[in-house]
Amino acid sequence: MNDVIGILNKCMLFKGVDEDEIENIISRINYKIEEYGKDSMVAFEEDDCNLLGIIIDGTVEIRKIYSSGKNVTLTQLKKAHIFGEAIMFSNFNQYPATVISVTKSKIIFISKEEIVKLCSQNEIILKNFMNLLSNKVLMLNKKVKELSLDTLREKICFYLFEEHKKQKSLKIKLSMSREGLAKYIGVQRPSLSREMIKLRDEGLIDFDRSTITIKDIRTIEDILI
Image (cartoon, rainbow, N blue to C red; front, side, top):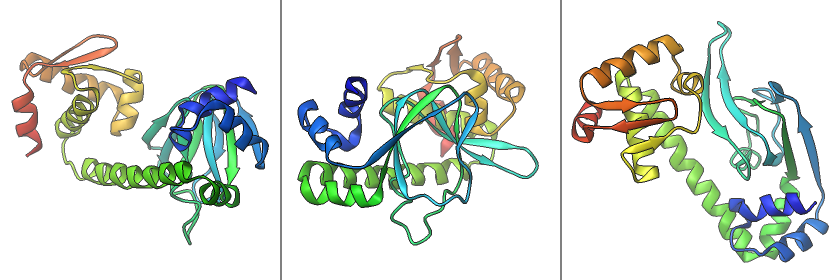
């Protein structure tokens, strides 16, 4: 249980709450811990969502899967990340996309009734939960902007620019494989590789296995205008 408490201590919902208090909180609420194998389904699109999930171990992806077989990775979640918080209190509390465990993973689930109880009893957790919801709105706005981009070049530049802002560096450390990045952007890996080579040949970026370096940030910005 100590490893679970340690991860929860890094989770946004419990930010500012010390480990002893987290242990006390967990002892007073109902929750369940589920384990998933690699490439197993955590939740299907349109399943009811009545639980908040916190990843204790492994990697989970939120994917939009189309009838044609095409799938787009909307977001990738790792240890201490949360999902379901913006859906479970909705009048239409169904998953808008499929949740897939891409590695072996362990997830703790807490019901919305228990979340309400926690928020009513602890002001820090209440503020953290409101912050989570605000961040989700901003993330969805960013995704809408991303989906409105027409060309692959624009999508790559948008990803690079957003990561540049997040990491505060022109040398961007990739948190996913090249295959994962292609799925995230919504293209085939060969198409992504060809466009990245073009960007490199034009002097806009350089890259290796795990990083992409922006060489011309001004032109990257101009592509997005």
